[in-house]
Length: 134
Image 1: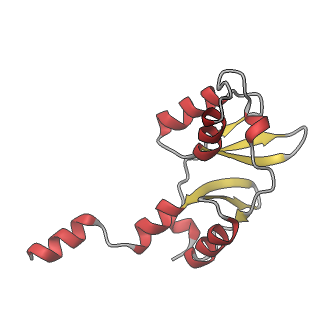
Image 2: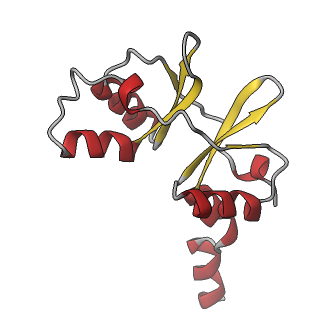
């Protein structure tokens, strides 16, 4: 199975000036754990994750003052839609992160998370339940 088969195509793109609270609110409403940060003036594409926000708030930083720019990972590993899920899982394991921005020739087309990969690799509850009953 390929990354394009597992990735979420719902990509939240925010700017570097968004506060952490704004980013968290947008991520929460969409039920996603990461946002692509587009900074045309500096770093290009980066990623802000739920972990980044949690670390900032947990260390006492004010989510209404702190901006995405300060907490964005800019040294990002990108995935191609044609990567296998094993390649994506290997990149995540090697890098110690849970999300990969998926790029094609035109820019971000999705995000694949550890949860997306597990959903594809593990049997669903319903299928497992049906096998137990049936």
